[in-house]
Length: 233
Image 1 (cartoon, rainbow, N blue to C red):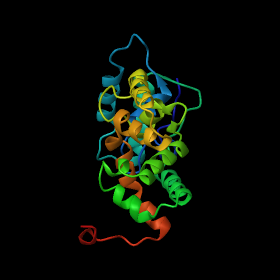
Image 2: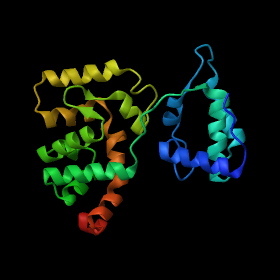
Image 3: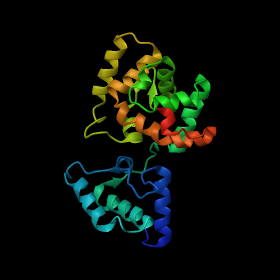
Image 4: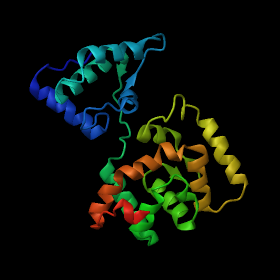
C-alpha cells in the first residue's frame, strides 16, 4: 500500500501530477476515465466504483481547496478502487498540443483559419468538402487517434474524450465492424477517415467539442481577430 503524507506540499505535488497526467483539470474536475487506467480493480469486487465515489463525496467536497480535493480524490482511488499499476500509461493530449496539431494540419493542407472556424460551427460541415475531410484525417493521424491501416483507435478515443455515453468504446469489435463496412464502400482516404469518425466514433460528442474548445487558443496562435456573431450570420 502506498502512503502519502497529508501535508500541503504533498497535496500540491499530487495536484501537479494530476494536471500533468490529465486526470485532474485546473477547475477541480476529475477525468475519471483517465485516472481509472492507473488502477486494477479486484475481479471479485463489484462495489469498487460506488465505494470510491462515496469516498470522494465524503472526503473531497466541492467547497474544499483544489489541492486538498485532488489529494483526497487520489487517496480514495488508492484505498477503494483497486491496485495501483506500476506501468507506463498514455497521457491524453493537452489543449495546447491539440492546438499545435490542428495548426500543423491547417498549414500543411493550406486551409485558411476562417474555413476551420466555419466548419466548427456545425456538426455536419466537416463532411461536406474534401479539404474539411482531409483536415479531419490529418488531425486524427497526428494526434494518434487514427491510422489509414487500422482506422480509429477505440482505446485512445476513450482516453482522450471519455465515453459520450455508457459502454461506448468498450466493445472495439462494434467500431471495427462499422469501419470495415465503410471500407467496403470504396471511399478515398480522407472520406473514409471522416465518415469513420462521424458514423462509428461519435464525432459530434468527441472531436467537435474539442475543436470548439481549442478554437480560441488557435485564434491566439494565428493572431486572428475574433469575429462578431453578427458578421458570421
